[in-house]
Each structure stands twice: as structure tokens, then as C-alpha cells.
Length: 374
Ligand code: PLP
Image (cartoon, rainbow, N blue to C red; front, side):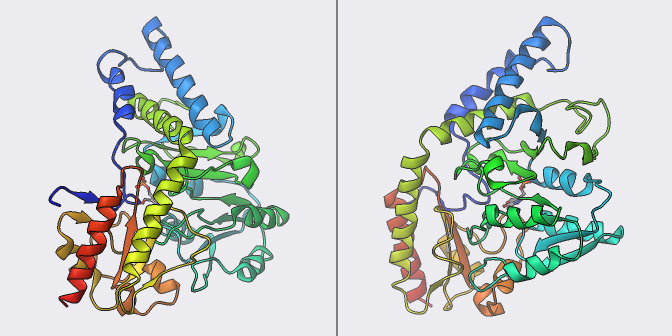
């Protein structure tokens, strides 16, 4: 098979052609600024309102609880740096969070906020006792992700939110790897702040958002000042084609969610079944609490960088989803207790609705060939 096989969908996804079609008029015909007061501008503003409705309903929020951003990284920065509730004493997060969270928490620590890092078990799930002890030390912003980008491990956010609120703290949940893939309802889960990014669910790059519960909106301060767009919380002309595309992607994914989930899960399980026949291989992270499109497998016989080179037209990933190419072992796998060798020999496969059975069979066969040649 010479054509490219893409199994790196946690890094980014192919934009759905229906999403592209929905976006196109907003470059060439409906290009006006949604902030302009002329009739054409008001028309764009109506399209924006409809898209905002779709995005907010897709996550169980109200329209005035969404701030559009350039993606999850910006949304995380806004949520953590812009949150100015006086009683907040601590920042609590987990050691396996994405670097967008960990590095932002680090930068706030320099400015005087105390951070507490919660550890995870070998299954990748956070240590609940540690979390409760940390919560008892005073009011905090707690940042725990929904689905891990490297292993797909899911945290029990509803349970965590219950404890966080009991201690009069606030929950930021990075749902970048979950929104558009699994049902996420912010109210049901008890989330206060939630970043997401369109390119993770077949939408365009460069657009995403932050859900901010109306109950705590008063605590949020803009990190980008200027024209006062989005109720002064994020200045700058809105990326209308991007927002339209994000809404369309969510609408499409929601329609076929059950069928698509089952198809992708079956393919993921099939790939895993075929690969685990290889001597010594094992899956990293919880098998039960995992998103359906991801598997992270350790092949102790070969370094992942070598495997990736040998796989040529098959795109998979080692280490973190979107950090620069690095041969340092993944902080997520290390935190789960893997040795450097095992962490450096692990590969993440992340599938999408475009993945086929032929691609899975071909990938499994190529990996078996590569390993038997070592
Ligand atoms: N959070 C998680 C869990 C991610 O997987 C990513 C990207 O991989 C991000 C945040 C950052 O997203 P973006 O690059 O769209 O800003």
C-alpha cells in the first residue's frame, strides 16, 4: 500500500470535506466583519450566532458561556492566567496533563501561586487520595484533563468535580481530546472551565474555544486586549470561517456518534489484538477507562523513533501529540512508571472515522515485519 495511512489523529485530523464546503463562502462571499454595523456585517453576525448556538449546545452550555480562541492552548492560557478569584490559594494539576497546562501552571508559579502536582497510577488515572489532600489545603483551581492525548485514559471528571466543589474550588477540564469524539456535557460533568480545539475533530486548525460557566465569568480577565470583542474577554476580529467550520464539524460528528464510535473502537481493538501477538508488547494505560480511538503500545524490541522511520507512509506518534520532535521519553509514560527504555519504545496509534480495515491490517503486518527484522 503506497498511499499514506494516517494513524495520528490525536495530533490533528483531516478536515471533513463537508466542513470545507461550509467554510468556503465565508472567505469569498460572506467575508465581512461580524462586528460591522452595516447590513452585510449583521448577516455575518447572524451566522456567528447560529454557529455559537451549535457549539454551545454540543457541549451542553449556553451561548454566552463560550469564548472563541485560536485553539486549546490559547483557551488554557486564558483560563489559567485570566482567572482572578481572590480566595484562590493553590493551583492543582496532574503530572500527566498536556504541556499547555503544565507549562502555564509553571509560569503562574513564578508569579507567586503555589502549585500542587497530583500523581497517577500505572493505569494513568489520577490518585484520588492525593487530590483530596491537596484540596483540603485551601481553595484552588484544579486542572484535570478528560482524555489523555497520549494514552487516551479517561478521568472520572464528574466525581472529581464533586470533590472540587465541596472544597469551594474550581474545575478546569482540558477536553481537547474528548470534545467532538465522545459526548461531553459541561453541566452534567460539573466543569467550570473547558478548553477545546476544532482540529482534533475534523474541523480547521487555528480555532477553538473556552467554555466558562456563567457562574464564574465574573472572575475571568482578558489576556488579549484591544477592540473589546467577545464581551471584552478576548479582543480581536473573530475567525468566522473557522468558527463556522468548527460548528459544522461538531454537527456532523454528533449525528453519527454511536455508529462512528463503534466502527473506530472495533478497528482500534482489532489493531491492538493483531499487534499484541508480538512477543513482549503491552498496552500503556487503563484498558477499561480509555477513549475508543487511541491505543499506546510498547514494543520493547525497537525504539519508537526507529519504528516511525521504518513505517514510512504510515503516520503514528511517539511521545506527546503536538510537541516538537524529541527523543526525550514521554513525561506521561514516565509518570505512569515506565522505564526510559519502555517509554522510548512506545507508539501511539490514534484512529479516526476515515480509518479503514485495510489500513489497520496493513499497519499490523508492517509492524510485525519491522519487529521480526530487528
Ligand atoms: N490539550 C490537549 C490534551 C491536547 O492534546 C492538545 C494538542 O494536542 C492541546 C491541549 C493543545 O491544542 P492546540 O494545539 O489546538 O492549541
